[in-house]
Length: 174
Length: 151
Image 1 (cartoon, rainbow over the protein chains, first blue to last red):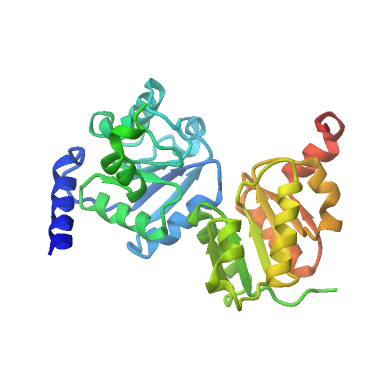
Image 2 (cartoon, rainbow over the protein chains, first blue to last red):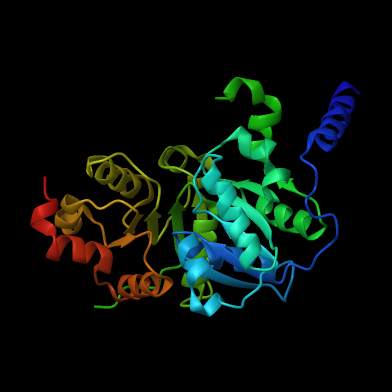
């Protein structure tokens, strides 16, 4: 009984304290750009997303500078950009990078895919225009969840970051 | 002499997406490839679920301590637990001594993590053919800048 109540409470708390959605409308996330140093990452994302949406096409760029300057993407638009190559911590630079990506590629959703935790990113997600914050060590199932949630127009914080922020939040703040 | 098929692969890496990406590449050579993903060497060496398992290839993507001693110990431990198998080191760190010890330590391929997918394919082809493989980034660092980078 207590366990059930506790679970309900946790879910309610989660819904109340999640950053407000930046994108309220369900969207079909067909065109995806993955920005990461590791060329294997887009391959994995393509595999995951194709399992959910047959029309998903994943493009790849090694870093944000090539993504913003590549001729191949001169007039491209994307529904979702996943970036694993931004700075690990919240900064003016990160804010600027997200703004530039949104401006250049037709206001795509932005997923930060990072192996470092910064609570400020979670706090400023809505204001910065970050729609999902997913830890690089998360399981494939978590990536699937993130994609589905984003497609439904909701922001997403992956389990590892969620636990760190909502359960240990104050303790790990800088 | 060509090697037997590589069917069972152990991938040691913190990131599950690495294992999935490798699976995509390896399956294009051999659809029956089975990949077991384990986050780190400690789990691989202690997990009961792996007790009876045999692998044809281990891909070590986990970042281990430097210099190469930790990695060489890992290779020896894996061979001890799972029997002889091919070893591919998939790392973002350059270590010239690893290149020098590849043959004696049982490492068959040394691939930089930033290499293109085409290079990983080449590495797998070499492994299937029983040939050693060093990726171009490491090759350049070693053969063109080798002496400068040595400690």
